[in-house]
Image 1 (cartoon, rainbow, N blue to C red):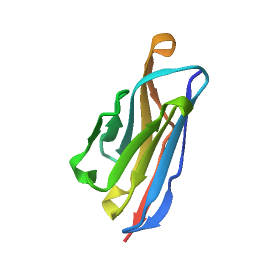
Image 2 (cartoon, rainbow, N blue to C red; image 1 turned 180 degrees about the horizontal axis):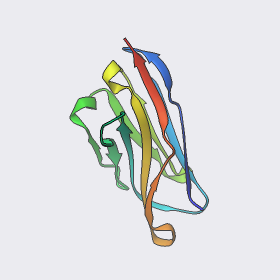
Image 3 (cartoon, one colour; image 1 turned 30 degrees about the vertical axis):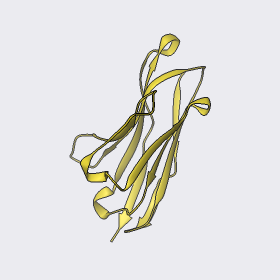
Image 4 (cartoon, rainbow, N blue to C red; image 1 turned 180 degrees about the vertical axis):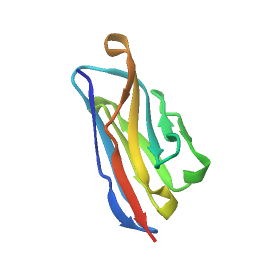
Amino acid sequence: QVQLVESGGGLVQAGGSLRLSCAASGGIFSINIMAWYRQTPGKQRELVALITGTGSTNYADSVKGRFTISRDNPKNTVYLQMNSLKPEDTAVYYCNMIMQRAYAGNYWGQGTQVTVSS
């Protein structure tokens, strides 16, 4: 059974930094896209950043220049380095992985809370 386990969320002051991690376990994977989404109460989940299997990245306009997504393929892990955090970055952050071959499917982590105080 595929599991995505996130870590790294927490409380930070505005201007601070956090690093989120998300590791997939439960098999040997071929992971195409790895991504981070976030959601606040009453709003739809939104894409924060994604990275493809070839290393191409895409970011939401609101986080460009402040967040960096990266991946470690042998570890089946995706990271989100978040700098210059703002109160409006407060949300539950979810990792997402789109896998191919034996475990083909769209998988989500359980979510990790990020709170930025002003």
